[in-house]
Image 1 (cartoon, helix red, strand yellow):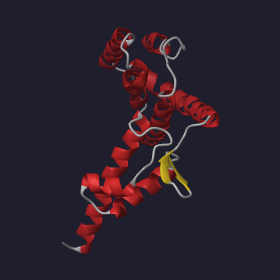
Image 2 (tube, helix red, strand yellow; image 1 turned 180 degrees about the horizontal axis):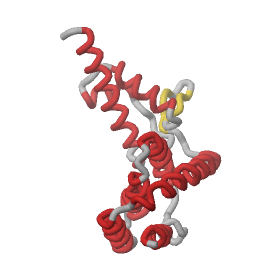
Image 3 (cartoon, one colour; image 1 turned 60 degrees about the vertical axis):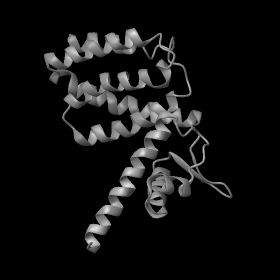
Image 4 (cartoon, helix red, strand yellow; image 1 turned 90 degrees about the horizontal axis):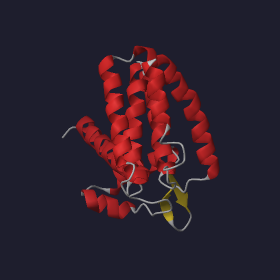
Length: 192
């Protein structure tokens, strides 16, 4: 194997581990304060520690992992300040995406949004509604509008903030908070 092929393989392993650990942190499988055991992850995937360490460093740069002396790396514990900052940034960026995307929505996209809204309504009584079902349906609903904006950079930034918001939302029950009523108002505005 050439050095270039070896680098591509190492990069791909780092990216795969990054994606898996990122998903585990966002969905709560790796809870806030939970240890990221580099040795165990390397064994789990049958790879060396190097791509795992690189993935953990990337997660640290994203604010999803903290390095604690004498303990190692742990999934970051969200704070009230995190929630405030993420919310403020999302309001601005998602507002821009909605402003750009709403006028471009097609009839099939509006139909998909109606279907998602019906799924949200029918899933509201499920026990895991706040722990994942709401997040995935809510994200798909909004993403339909944002994707219509046609701005890949804006979508990438929104995606990063949405993952952070999902992680923060796992610590709260969205039923009765008003968060689950917004899609109905948004759909009505898009239809107009």
